[in-house]
Image (cartoon, rainbow, N blue to C red):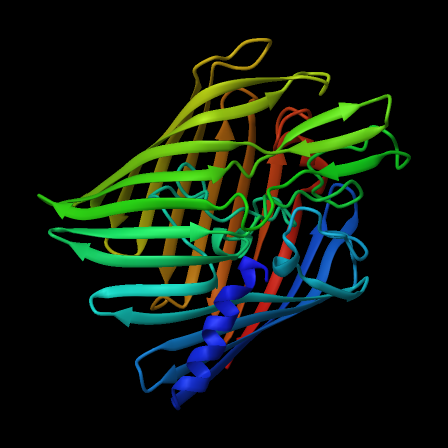
Length: 419
């Protein structure tokens, strides 16, 4: 039996052994449109239904399930019925046709064993203090269906995993185990936000040598405490690096995605000083691999990254937040940058009794001299209806991560109904 199915069996056992005391249903329906004004193409015209079911039991256990049903008549973000080579079998979505995808987003069981909190099932496990930039928040891989434009919660791929959290003296200890072999989901050539081009123009083959579920599990521990006004965590994770090493073999016309194991050590700190909050996060990977320019070789390096953040809250309605992200590669050679820096700026203003939210988010890459700027506004019409819209602007070097999508800058409009 596949290890990834054990959480589901645990949930079934609880249902049989404990009578239910209450059930809660909720749903959201979102209509979304996105138009690329440089190219004159629609990127998205979709309807997404996300139902959630919460079942409580006399034992105190709680079972949560969340699904996703999406119909996108443009079929540009993830065209056709993709084979999903980056996902383990039990974590894949279902595509009944080119325009529709169905997915079990989350399914997990919560319970207390004495003072220990246990969560088992398909879930998101979040580490770190950084907003949008990942240093320690690497337990769940990401999907790049819409690149990095959506909120991080919508970009993470929930994994079959187990979490135990318990107090130990003045600290809280968290243990995680992830047998799910899913890795970062890059969009294949032909998708709007494809991160790599097909060197063989559809005449080659793709090999994704991702980890086998249950055989190369991730496991980690986090200790957290509140010490003299500081929120502190110390982290360790033995994991598969979800970002791939891409290699091209011209003789066999093969593009291969490889993955390696690494030890990640890290820590976070945060403290509020009145209206100002200081945040810091650092992580060191024992091994990261990068492809050479021709994608026919690679180099390996130890890598250390950190984020320094400053949040300033003005009269409770205006938030100004800035972050510096820097990566150091300890054995960089053959054209690989020794260090990389990115700056982020977030300005969020809430008005009209918090019914109107205006936001600016900018990410600037120092080395590539490129940027992503997002301007958005959201208005809550009633307790159930909310409308939002904005513009996502890519600029800079066309060979860079952001600049390559200049022609995919877009305006978007969304309407969400909750019940």
